[in-house]
Length: 334
Image (tube, rainbow, N blue to C red; front, top):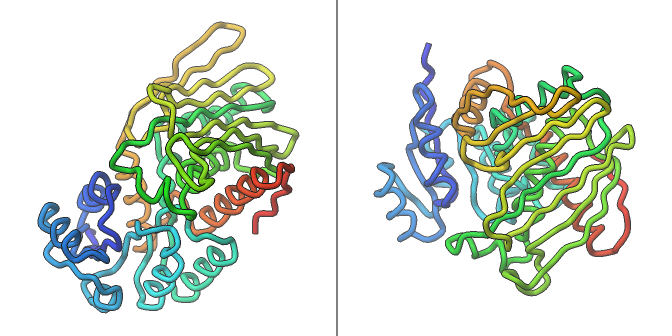
């Protein structure tokens, strides 16, 4: 049975335009019924370009609409907390962009309020929906390379000019909360574990200003003394994204797999050589919004829950603190 689901977009963002409108409309009964932007002109243009019947500058106006069942929030990071709380209290399910908030306390409160209101909270961590990472998770779970020893994540690229706004100018931006937090969530998904400590060094000044980081080298220590290196950045053109997982009996290699696009390969290198794993690629956001839609109709849970968003934020903030203090920071995920 098809359940109609009316959506409101809180934020007329690039990601909403490029990926989310389509992901919602791909779901049976999924309709984008309204968009909110603080800029009336931008909201009107977004609505017209994307065939959305209603636009507004008022959060209360959007949340009061009875034809909206769920909202997707992609506004500035500092706005996520209040907008999610307001949506939950209005009885709307929430798919929120990362980071959920700017503090673990606020993110945890978002989870609490959504649970109390009986609405579903999802975090838009898209990478765990990729065919590549799902395959890697299965290989690790099946013990294909034996016990884990270490891993490396490469997720540095050149930030497109159209995106060089708040990410490199706002103290609430920076590569850690915008991009590295996705790497953190992916590692949590792959290992089914939270890291226990973090150490990081950052760069600033090639694109960003006022000390906002536009590059990072970080190390996370996971249970079992598994060390993971992460390289992230906004300033490295032509750098392919990838991940390597080293185990006692082999290595899993994911190439071109840190992307929004449904691309990339996975192979295993062991005593018998290197073997590519067959994959069936799919749109990452179609899967994420499919699982979320099912969850709000009582079937299953989002790919990344609110609790996942709290955890990734706690770890990302530990990396920020380490870069600021020059110390290894212990991690306590709520």
